[in-house]
Each structure stands twice: as structure tokens, then as C-alpha cells.
Length: 325
Image (cartoon, rainbow, N blue to C red; front, side, top):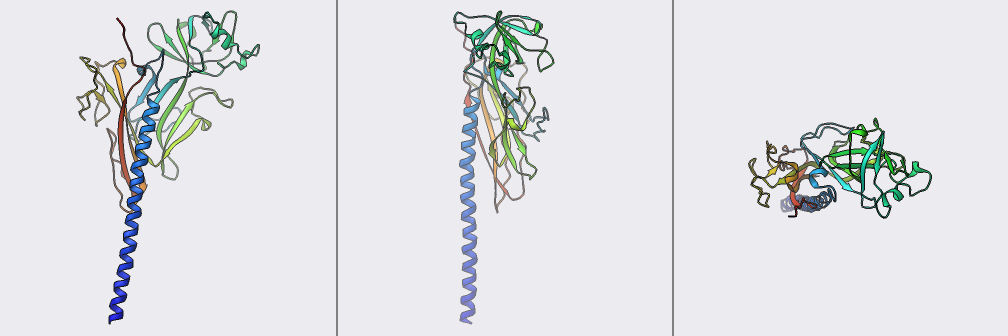
């Protein structure tokens, strides 16, 4: 009887030890998950701060799709958000456009001749100019922005070709402005065939013969992070009257859009009143103790066998509009 009791006690101790070990492993996994979520949040906010740049501004350089729908080979987001950030390419000159002729934009030659020399940097073979297949924005003199896909360039006079029918509007209607080479980065969560979720980014940029044409190509896709079950974006604005703050009260009546369910941007707010940007992220890990999660105005995420953690943060936008007297 003593041996039997001792055996029962031993089995109970082994079972308790195994349970304790599983619990400790599970706890460690969850702790690592929270750390990963915070690092991902900080990396995303740092990238979002790069939006715009002279002569672009954040309100010209950020497209937020709340509860995004399918488009351009990108799937419906199932309650998540999608964001496209436009970044100025620092290695390209900013060129003034004085007018248009046919499918060509006439580019002003500055004192150093940078724009024309750059356009013809590789000599007579203008088809291989750095502007070939390049995405660009024309910031027009009236303050509006037009997206362009550039093609051949030439000198004498200095022109850039933006033919209609290749992602461009009718060039004669564009008018004068500033030509800015850009890189557009779109970030969104994507469910794989296995059922796992990933945060991915699409960079619409010329590479290996692929044009910056607004069409998602597998060669343009990059993995940002695994096990991302939701991605939400919130925008802070300086309301009326403008007081230099973007107040977040966690309600639909504060100075943030998309921070609570049912929140909409007030009609009186203009795009150039954008001051801050934030993200909310839900990440998950297989666990014996699953947990659902919800962040910002996103839906409640609940997947069997997955422990979910949330993180959210916000930063001031760079390149703000600054008016001097």
C-alpha cells in the first residue's frame, strides 16, 4: 500500500511538473510576443514618419484605407486597414515643370543644369535614363497632386515623357508645377493559404524590368512580420479652432480619426490639418490559453489556439506645413 501511495504521489508530481513546465513555456512565449509587438509598432511608426518631404507634405503623401476593400490584386482586408506612404527619392532632383507639349512635360533647366543633365545622364540612350519607368508626382501650382508613371526623356528642350494610357492622365491638362520622383510603400495584413497571417508591404518601384505601374507584382512584395492578425491606422488632426494639439479622448468626438469604432473624419477638417499618425497591431502565438484581442476601431480578433496581444502608439508627423509671416 505504501508503494502504491508513493507511486501515485510520484505520478502526481510528474504531472504537476509537466503542467508547470508547459505553463512556464507558455508564459515565456507570451512575454516574447509582447516584446515583438512593441518592436514592430516602433518600426512601423518610424517608417510612417518618412511620409512626404519637400515639396510634399503628409496630407499629400499618406493614403489610409479604413477597413480596406480589394483593389489592384490586393485582397479585402476583413476589417483591417491599409496604408500607402509616399516617400521622396532623395537621389533624384526636384525639377520645375513649366508646361507640356503632347505627351511631354517641359522641365526647366536650373542654373547648374541638374535636371537636364540628370535626365540625360547616361548619354544618347535616353530609354535608359534614370527617369525610365519611374513613379513621380507632379505637385501643381494650384496645390493639387497628380500621380505619374514616367518614360523616355530627352534634352533640347528638356522634357519628360508621360504618355496617356500608361497610368497617366492627359498631359496637356496637367499644367505647371514641380516634378518629384517618389517611392510608394503600401502596408497591409494578408492571410496565407495555411491560414496564418502576415503583415506585408508592396513597393511599387521599377526593378528587374518591372514598371512602377500601380499593379502588384510578386517581385515587389516583402514580408514585414509574421503572426499579425490585425493592423489599424489612426490619424490625429488639429481641429477647429487650431491650438497646436491633437487630443485623444478615446471617443468619436476627439481630434483623432479611426481610434474608436464608428469614428469618421469631421467634414470641416481639411487634409493639411493632419498632425499625428498612430498604429494599432494585434499579434498572436500558438498557446494552450488562447486570448482574443481588439485594437482601435478594428474588430475583435479570435482564433482558436492563438494567444493575442495588442500594441498601439503614435508619433508627430514630420514635414508639417509651416507658414512664415
